[in-house]
Length: 156
Image (cartoon, rainbow, N blue to C red; front, side):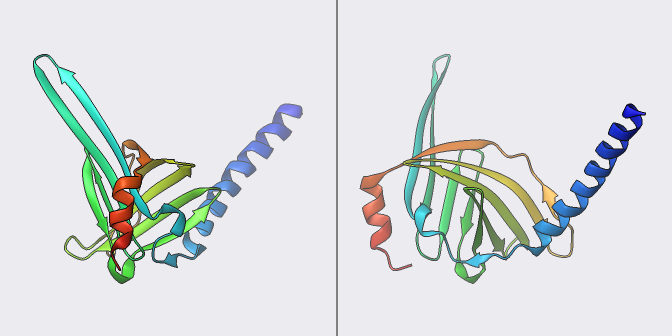
């Protein structure tokens, strides 16, 4: 009897969880622009030695009032214009932007912890098609005060 009750409760919990998750994602409001706590320049400099070769990686995120530029070793994204938006949920920022040349919405998760930041691309959505999850690589960035002054001087 206990196995039946526990099994039924688990099945109902799983079925109910799927319904709430998709509904909540669709109903969440996006705020236009970029979050003030992410503005500035965030960088990661890495050097990798392979035999006699040296590979240098430079990951960065530059965020101003209306634009966000993300350049990583696994691809770059430019968020900007009137279609950049974000939302905050449990300390994690979710950025989205529409790329008019590819006609696709890009989604990135960003978590800030003091002077450090972790970012990961988590999805894409082509116009007229459903949202598609992407398991992107993670970049760990650090606040760069020297480059930050230059980025925040711009009016954009």
